[in-house]
Image 1 (cartoon, one colour):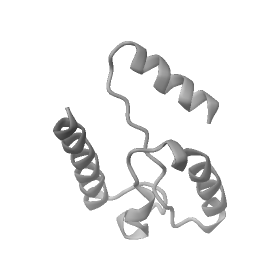
Image 2: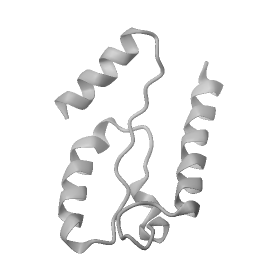
Image 3: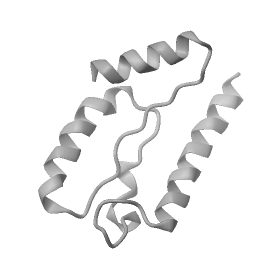
Length: 88
């Protein structure tokens, strides 16, 4: 958590727009506890929620998003960028 926040602060100090997202869910049962633990640390600071997209976006390797999953993730990022643009 501290490393992620340090990276966000460092990037922000250069004028870059920073956004933090949580991890997607996985279909590998042995990795689910780790993903949830990491997301529990990230969630209070995130702007983008990928986890809530569920496991239907996960490919046959049980870990990475499939093509549709990446499309849904891009739409989430686009929505957050649009909200940020509307606020400024």
